[in-house]
Amino acid sequence: MTLCLAAVIFVLGSSASLSQAAVPQPQITAQSAILIDGLTGRVIWEKDADVHHYPASMTKMMTCLLGLHMIPSDRPITISPNAAATEALPLGIVRGDVLTAGELIPGMMLVSDNGAAVAIAESASGNVNDFVTLMNMRAAKLGMTETHFANPNGLQDPMHYSTARDMAKLARFGMRDPLFRHVVGQPQGVVHWLTPAGKTLAAKNTNELWGVYPGLTGIKTGYTQAAGGCLAASAKRDGLELIAVVMASPTYDSRFGDAAALLDYGFATVTPIEASEDIQRQKTVWVSGGTQARTTVRPQQNVVYPLREGEDTTHYTVKRELPAVLPAPIEDGAVVGRLVLYYDGISVGDVPLVADGVDAGTSIASWLVGVFSGFLTWWEGEA
Image (cartoon, rainbow, N blue to C red; front, side, top):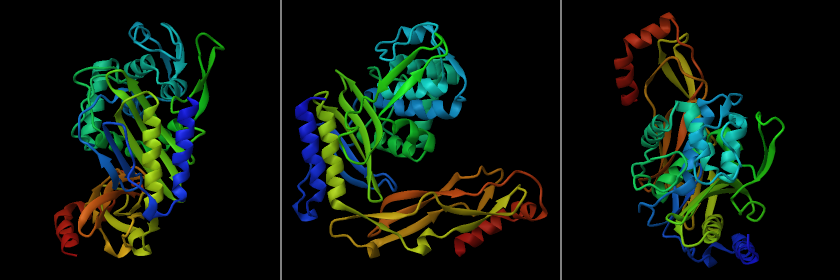
């Protein structure tokens, strides 16, 4: 990082101490940007957040998420000729190298290795095309309506595009995943090879906000000449975690200053207030086809209202979007619904609702729930 960039970020990082009234709008050089509350997804600030841009290596957030959950961490991954021939290999991988997924995935995210993304895609799905199909399917499930992936690494392709808003949705989803959060929360690490035996690489995170911006928690850089500077950056202070995404920043370094300005603006103008106990409470839900007929559903995290300047918690209302009957099996901690937050009647965010696990099986009570599921759905709706 240049001395000038470090000085700019230091000044920006100091602005959180200013009073809210004194905080000016952030001056962003990127063509598109967005700042959201990491818990609820509420938009704090945006600039042309729905304009299509190349996401560059921010793409690897999706590759990382799929790889973490599709490939056992101890599975050996052999670098194929296709992966070894990919442009930009800062890990120094070559054809025939072997690394476990638990080493290659963090290594890919630390130094943004494009060939590693190809190798991960091949290991997960057998080939890159099938993996890209899964990437687009997951994007659709996350509501990333303005995104289309054409590869697992973000190299330029006319059919590979996204928006700042969609990248923020992906980043927020990832940061709710403990495995992903751990991977992207490393400022540096050491990558170990199986073959050649004993080979290692000390890897430094490409996100130059590490060690400079207070409270940083992640996430992923991106840069090509066509894309410009891209960055998804997250930071947490005093119970508030914010996610900033910038796309098409004019220079390699300007993306870091842009993201720091956005985060600083958020920390200076947003106050996190914990919701009442009634909002946080657990709810019992019917289960059909399981070993038991009821399970407990609760918010995935404590519900905290992000209050902007001049706002009041009394203007917040919530609505649980949750089926009256859940089919077994239910994995422990599975997302089964959402708690939607409204401010003055306008939807501004949501918190996932998760359930205690229930095994598939037979119990008279759960069988009866299945028989009367239609009635129970009507009854819960009336209630």
